[in-house]
Image (tube, rainbow, N blue to C red):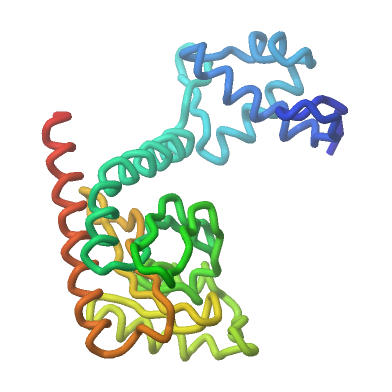
Length: 266
């Protein structure tokens, strides 16, 4: 695999993997060109046609481009479109969820969060602090192990057995005080599915308890998780009941608005 010395987007000098860099540049060119021939790709990259052909063939094998049998030109493939749609869904859910996140924070007087799955972790993409003097700070941008967070567990509970094993294949998982058995998580996720919400108490952060629910898109696919975080000292059975009901209500409202937006778009 070759390397090329180029400047990174932030202006710093960086060693980039040449073949990966070329492949990404080809995909970026599909924003401006409906399709590319091998010769055109070679000219855009400044490489030999044989190199361009190998790059396009690799992208085709992974579904990022498709080749028209008649013209032999390459255009965007299903994998590339799936990535683009996922990005659009993330932007869309944040826009729709924002007022409900604010309402959830006001209703519970605690910090409300919106997170999306990123492999074995979840990333908080929006967060609104509650009005209490002692509160959990806004968590926007934080990346948390999915199996230790309420929102992450809510999303993991929506996965099938095979998909869950692919995401978390290890028999032992890192816990707040040491490794925990994966089977314990599997049992907990079954309970999450039964009751419709997940909890995390002193797991992702000492002194913090959270309640999380999943948000699905119009096709029923897992899209994000809505959660409420509060100091563990304020968390009890009564608060759990109130917060879980509020979170489930707001998640349902977000899903309704996403459906309405989809219908209006058509």
